[in-house]
Image 1: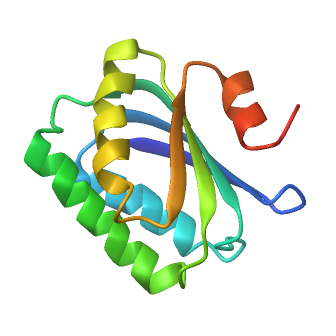
Image 2 (image 1 turned 60 degrees about the vertical axis):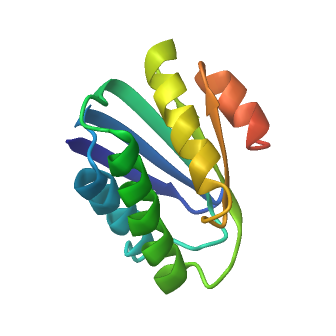
Amino acid sequence: MKHDLTIDIPNRLVRSRIRGVLTPASGEAVYRECVTHPDWSPHFDHLLVYEKIDLSELSTEAVQDMVQRFKALDDQYRQGITSKAATVMDSQLQAGILSFHEHISAPELVTEEAIFETMDEALVWLGRVE
């Protein structure tokens, strides 16, 4: 999986562009790269843009595993501090699969998550207009 990470400190926003096969391990690696970046803060919101992503490896069990991996990183790095994570998908089917992830992760993770079809919708939800 390819991940491009940008941290916009003045706007308190982490931007991730993600391409390739998403698995629990690759999702954890992306999240770990974010939370261990020297410019990252748990107060920053996150904009994730999935482009040509392959979710074929995400069975129900794999999604549950990924949530637990994210929760472990949240527990270690976020200190209970909440933020928002907006995901932009290029496919309705993929958005449906990630909606399942969003639904089961809600009680586990400290981030408020939502999925969008366009970047503009995601930025409005995050309270940012470009």
